Image (cartoon, rainbow, N blue to C red; front, side, top):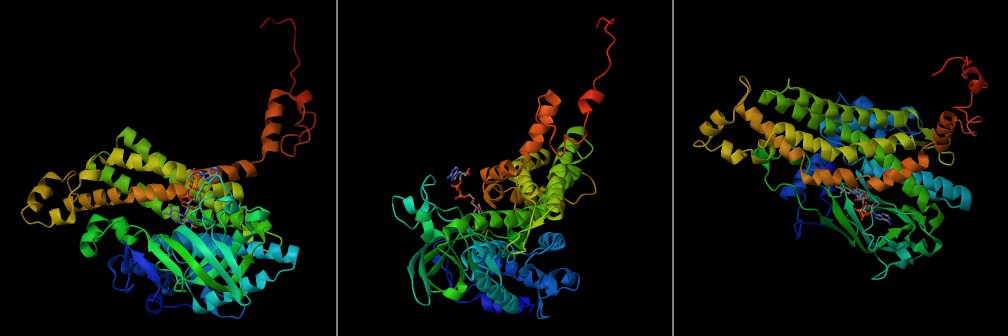
Length: 504
Ligand SMILES: Cc1cc2nc3c(=O)[nH]c(=O)nc-3n(C[C@H](O)[C@H](O)[C@H](O)COP(=O)(O)OP(=O)(O)OC[C@H]3O[C@@H](n4cnc5c(N)ncnc54)[C@H](O)[C@@H]3O)c2cc1C
């Protein structure tokens, strides 16, 4: 089914144990921060019901029922391109939070379940597909909880010193299910998601088998405690919209999810001790999630680039050479991220055990690395081009004080024909869209820079690069390379005849 925003908002106030700024949230619909977050989450249900977006977001499942396309498994390059288009269109339209982390985790466990079933004779794929059907039928929002709190990073889960719960683990296997304990951290969209899919965040050795664990859980389950992150802003309504246009659109949604001996029934368990397959889940999740990250970032980079272009225009410096060079750099980074995400879908390939289409590893990691390693630079350009008002800009309250407004109106105008209010709003947006929360998010979200470097190193075609180098340096060993050794006789043909009588 395709739920309406009203149906979503009705169900999300489900009695979950969630905290904000140290206080238990009594009602998600009226708590200032939580109601802002769930209203953003509701956009995930507004957009597919809008006739302009319906064809993109709504598809039919095998039973012929209308379901959200993002809840189906990608099986071709076209599916990946459509998935990416949903993310970008949804983010541009102001939504799509509840069908990203969770569905990336779902794709990852689909891959790993296929492999486990094939190698070990388990039946995890049945659980995964039954769960997918349930999500489709109920049209639920899901988040993906991967990152453990991790304790001492140099130690494997089973070798931690202070206690054994730095990584989520199985503490008991029972007839009807398992009991799990531990905590996941920084989990986006938690307040507005109905359920979470849990997968491991690292590879495991045999000693870590109790940490090789994947399952799905409703977020109002007994023992699940959600500790919300600090809101970016604490003013709402017209004032919030004026002063913090980015955060007004989306407050940070991250939570630490504590599992205080939570019971998970077997039918919701997708991995339970198969430590050899943690690597498959981790790698598949990282790949899918970077596709989301690279898609989500396109609208965000477009907004930031647009803000800088606007403020340059409003300040009268849009024709200045160094400003144009800086804008060109922003446009280039924005375009590169978009093009790499597209290439990752076009050059994708199917995973044999599950038939899931996997984005191209090189392109998708390059996309994430490009925005993560350049976002601070883009913020620097924004601050440089905009000038100091990007931080000292007056607030809504200043602007709306009748005694101050005439001064602000007069002295903070710039280019003739541009309303002072518009200029102030753009400064406020730059200040907010370059907030340190976002700078830290974009480096760490979808994995640290080192994680992409590892994928880039492992996916690069070193044989090709070395063959290229050997051919250039006339060192034997390039002749059999499919790219550089394909023209036999190259050395003879390109060796020029020499008339020795010249003195050079
Ligand atoms: C805003 C935001 C949203 C997020 N959303 C989600 C989400 O929805 N779901 C989710 O599961 N996660 C989410 N994350 C988590 C994100 O994936 C992690 O922050 C990221 O993987 C880094 O992990 P960490 O924060 O624990 O830092 P650390 O792992 O401590 O990393 C810090 C540094 O130490 C390095 N390092 C760590 N361990 C090792 C090691 N063993 N060997 C070598 N180097 C090491 C890292 O490469 C990095 O340079 C989110 C993060 C943020 C900031």
